[in-house]
Length: 145
Image 1 (cartoon, rainbow, N blue to C red):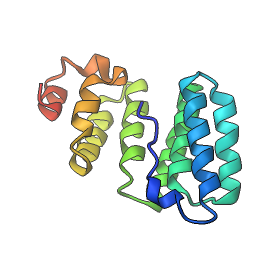
Image 2 (cartoon, rainbow, N blue to C red):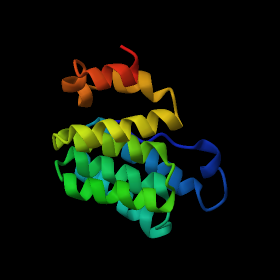
Image 3 (tube, rainbow, N blue to C red):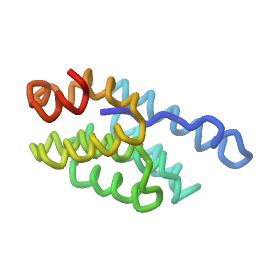
Image 4 (cartoon, rainbow, N blue to C red):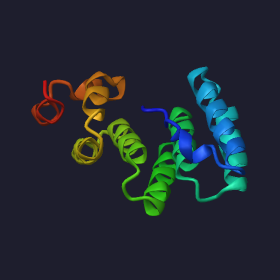
């Protein structure tokens, strides 16, 4: 699962700096396995800006790590309603679909995310969430292995 990366310039504006710091903190907590605390920080950030797609997707990552896959998908879908090309929501939704063994949806979402950001080809190739796809011919063709 790709932890959402900050779009740094977006959080340099007054009123957004605190949200950027909260995203940084939730990322650190997710890496440390403190998923419930990360989720709480995301919820606090959303009180400040309920339309922030980075925070919404980060909340989805926390839900995924808590094995609350339906809630994770809801977060990624909400982020995509607000920004249909938000690549991190698409990629992370693909990871959740893989956890649900929905190979067709996983591949379709991966293709969509790679078309938006070709660097995700390398990320997906090495992402443990897609380990079981590594011998799948469609996945191999998609990521170039």
